[in-house]
Every structure is written in structure tokens, then in C-alpha cells.
Image 1: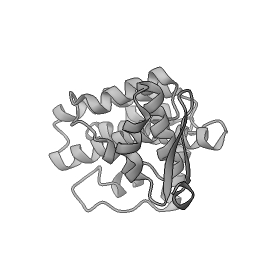
Image 2: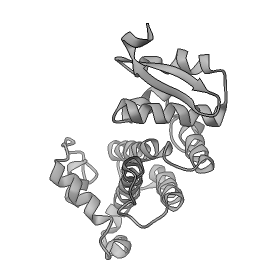
Image 3: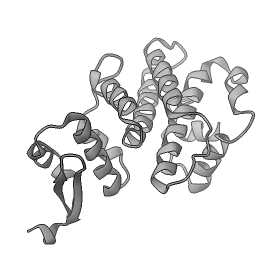
Length: 206
């Protein structure tokens, strides 16, 4: 609940930054045995933001764990998390307990969780996530530039580019032309059609 308040999901108060302790407490919720029943007892007007924060946080935790090579703290599978998060995001426009400002914050939160997890998912699920983000049906179409800004570092951006490439199998030049600008200080280099791209220092590529 503290994290929800900090993120401005209860009111139109200015959005605050989550401290390391706040983030740790939010992740700790994922392993709490009472978590599954929490949404039943939370106030109705806060049920939507709670569920979006819960699913988005769990997806991000899955991505962090996958990148680090260990099991995620949350025992729910990523497909279930995506489907439930998508379900709650679809409810945002018609939710009478949430004003326009908080609705946008909730969309942003859900989008961030999906984008940061996408490249860590199996290909079919990643494609479904991508179609939802780019489809423009339930939320405004998410531009690639916004996706890159949501990713924490170049390693995750590279993983994202390769995810797009493996799904699309377009001309490598297309990816170099469109996405090189998102890698300051490093250069995208095409390796192989079955692998995608790698990164090298910009000076080494000149």
C-alpha cells in the first residue's frame, strides 16, 4: 500500500521515487503466502491499482531473475501474469473509481512491466505481449523509442533488439538504422541470422 501511494495510485498527489527499501518491500509481497487473497480484502476502489502493481512487479521480478540466472521469487508463471495484467489494463478505461491522471499512471506501470519482461519470455508469449503493446486497441500504441527508455541498460536493450529480430527476421540493416541511436557509446553489430546482434565499443567498430 505504501508503494501504491508513492507511485500516485491512490490520488493525484505528486509521484514520488521508490527507495531501495520500498522496492524490496514490494518484491517481498510476491513471496507472501497471503498475497493471493489480498485483493479480496482491499477496498474496492483500490483493487484495480493493486492488481496492476502486483502483476507488473511480478513480471519485472521474473525478468530480473531470468537475467541473473536464478528462479524468480514469485511462483506464478509469466503467461498467467501477462494475461492477468492485460485483463486489468483493459478494465482501466471504464473504472469509475479512477480519474484520468491515475488511469494513465496505471497504464504506464503495466506497460513498463510488460516491456521489461518481454525479451525474457518464450517467443510465442513475447509476440503476444508485443502485439498488445503495439496494437493500439486497448491502450495507445507504444512506440519503440518509449520501450527502449523503459529498459534499464544496454544489455537489456540488446536482448530486446534480438527478441524483435528473431520474431521479425527482417533485414538486419533495418534494425541497425532504427535502433542504433538507443545504444550510446556502443555499436550494434550483426552476428548471424539465428543469433541476431551483439554490442561492441563504438571506437572498436569504426
